Length: 301
Image (cartoon, rainbow, N blue to C red; front, side, top):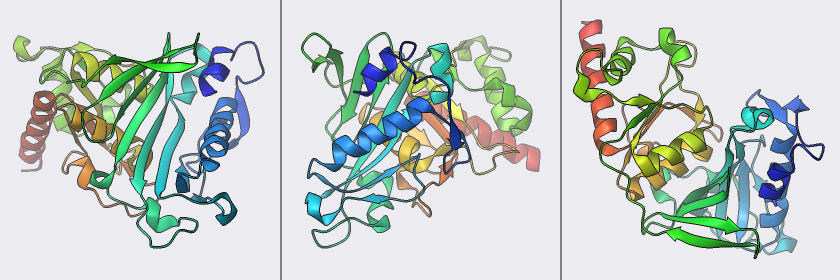
C-alpha cells in the first residue's frame, strides 16, 4: 500500500509538508503521516501484535482488547528518508519485532517496547526505489525479496545475504566535518587516501539511511553518523533505526556500534532515544573504531 502511494506521489496530493511536527520536532511530510497510519491500521487488526511504537508517535499505541492483542511488539519508522520525498530519492520503512515482555494477553505497554536490541526476534526494511525491495531476518540469515506488481507478491531473489568483510564505500554527511572529534576527521581523511592509498574508499552518501545501508549491505562499506558537537547523543533513533539495522547487519556478517558499545547491547532508557551509529562491513567498522579511539585518546592527552 505504501509502495503504491510512493509511486503515485506526483499524481496525487501526497507530496510536501503536512503542516505539523512529529515527536522528534521534525516537520512531517504528508507521506510520513500516510505511511504511519497505513502501518497502524494494517497491523493493528491482524491479531498478531499487542502494541506498536512509531517514530511519528509520541507514545506507544496499544492494541485494544477487543482486537484480540497478540504476542508480538512492533516498532517502526514508517518512512525513513522522508525529507527526500520531493526529489524522488529512495526512501523506506524500517521495522523491529519483539515478543511481548509483560504477562497476560491484553494490550501491550511501554515496557514491552523498551527491550534491548539483542532480544529482537525479527527485523527488516522495505525500500521504495526502482523496485520495491523487502530485506528481513528472523535470526537465521538475511533474505531479500522484490515485489512483483503483476501478482502483488514478494518474490525471493537473494537467500542468505553475506556482506563483504571489507567494503568499497564509506557513507557519511561530510558537511558536519567541523562538528566531529579529531578521530572521525582522521577516518575520513584515511578513506580519501590522504595518508595511505590502500585505505581509500569511494564516498557514497544518499542521505536516506535505509538506502545507504542497503547499498553497503550488498556491496560492502561503512555508514557513519557519529555524535558531534551539536548532537552529542547522536541523531538516529535506537529503537526504530539502529536496532533493526544492526540486527540485519550482524545476521549478514557485519557489525554495528555507537562508537563504544555494540548497538544490540544498549539498554533503552526512553522510547525515542537517539544514538550514534557506525554500521557495515566488519573490518571497516573495526578500522573506524580503532582509529577514532587512538586519535581521540592522543588528542585528549
